[in-house]
Image 1: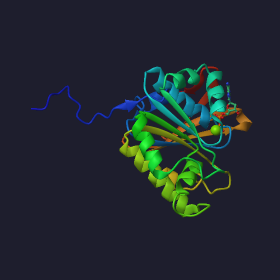
Image 2: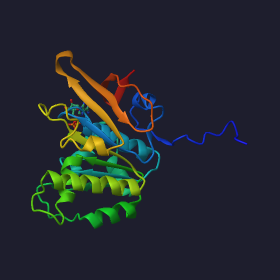
Image 3: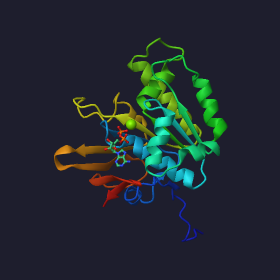
Length: 239
Ligand SMILES: Nc1ncnc2c1ncn2[C@@H]1O[C@H](COP(=O)(O)OP(=O)(O)O)[C@@H](O)[C@H]1O
Ligand SMILES: [Mg+2]
């Protein structure tokens, strides 16, 4: 007989650490999801990703930050501004901060080494900032010297597939470029491959920022956008 108290379909949630957003998501992101965080320059994507990792680090989780636009030092400095001590967690081998230079595609990363690395550190949370450059980096292997759109999509599928197999909960940023016909990502493929999509935006005329959940597999959520603020201790959403 079914025990009334048991909830067999209850998915385990991973808190983003962004107050208000976790409420909107009924507790957080479903464990194992790969979520896209999109927005134009300065919308708060990197801050959001740092806050998400810090939430895990506070709880003793092992986390991986893959950065392609900013240096490791810049990321640690960004985080420190909000009181998040990434250097301490790196020393404790709880945070692995890896930097790749997208203009030096012959770096140390290959499809195999990425797979092995993910397996080796057993991170529960991974962030990639931004995924478009990382996919280009991964795609380089074995195909063409400068990957075209096909190569980048192939890299993207590869990365997401490996992260899924490793059962990590991942956030990856992507830039929304104006005049791209409403695409939510750099290549227009990322939002379809991802399990979820969170959109950040700024309204200069109103001097406000907004955040909305556009897609989140397995969760019933509102499509409304909410005002958000970047405060001294990070992003907060006004519900
Ligand atoms: N310590 C801080 N306190 C308040 N706002 C900040 C702080 N640091 C950055 N910001 C705001 O966040 C913006 C950049 O956020 P960032 O996460 O780097 O955006 P993105 O990665 O989307 O380009 C800055 O332009 C600034 O408005
Ligand atoms: Mg950024």
